[in-house]
Amino acid sequence: GAVVSQHPSRVICKSGTSVKIECRSLDFQATTMFWYRQFPKKSLMLMATSNEGSKATYEQGVEKDKFLINHASLTLSTLTVTSAHPEDSSFYICSAPSYEKLFFGSGTQLSVL
Amino acid sequence: GENVEQHPSTLSVQEGDSAVIKCTYSDSASNYFPWYKQELGKGPQLIIDIRSNVGEKKDQRIAVTLNKTAKHFSLHITETQPEDSAVYFCAATEAAGNKLTFGGGTRVLVKP
Image 1 (tube, each protein chain N blue to C red):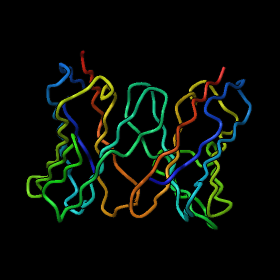
Image 2 (image 1 turned 90 degrees about the horizontal axis):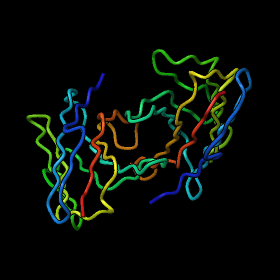
Image 3 (image 1 turned 120 degrees about the horizontal axis):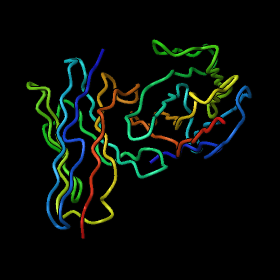
C-alpha cells in the first residue's frame, strides 16, 4: 500500500507553545489529506480535511484558529496546534487517499505539560 | 451524517479460534467499508475493504461480509494467532478515498 509518513512521532511541550505536525505522502500525490484525533481507548474523530491550494474544511466543533492546517504541496500537509494546553494532549493521525483507499500515518502523540 | 456502531467493544478468543466483529451504519448512501487494525501507539493499518456491489470478500484468514439491505457488515478472522491481538476499527464512507466515519473499535485479545 501507499506510505504516509508523519513526524514527529512524539512531542512534549509546555502550555502556551505551538507544535507543528507534518504529514507526507511518500510515493504518491494527495490533493486531499485528513486529520484525525484519537483519545486513549477511543475511536478516531475527524478534525479537518486538508485541501492542497485552498483552505481546510473543519468539522463541527473544531476550532480552526487553534488547529491550523496548511497543505503546501501535493505531498505535504501540516497541522499546527497553537497555544497548546493540556486538554490538547492527544494522538493526532493524518491520512491520505491513494487509489480510492485511505492510508494513515503512524500518528503523533502530543503531551502538553 | 453517517453513524457507525461496532460490537463487541472487547473480544477475547483462544488461539486458533475464530473472531467476528460486527458493524452497522446509518447512511444508505455509504458504499465503501474498510477495516483497520491498530496496534498500540501506531496508526491504523488497512487490512481489508469491501464495496457495496460485493457481498463478501476474503483475503487469507480474513473475510468481510456486507448486507447492504440491513446496513450490516462484519469482519471474520479465522485461525487466530497472538499477533492478531490489536484494536480493530470498521468504517464507512459514501465515496472510497473520502473521509471515513469510524466505529468505536474492538479490542481483540488472542490468548495462546
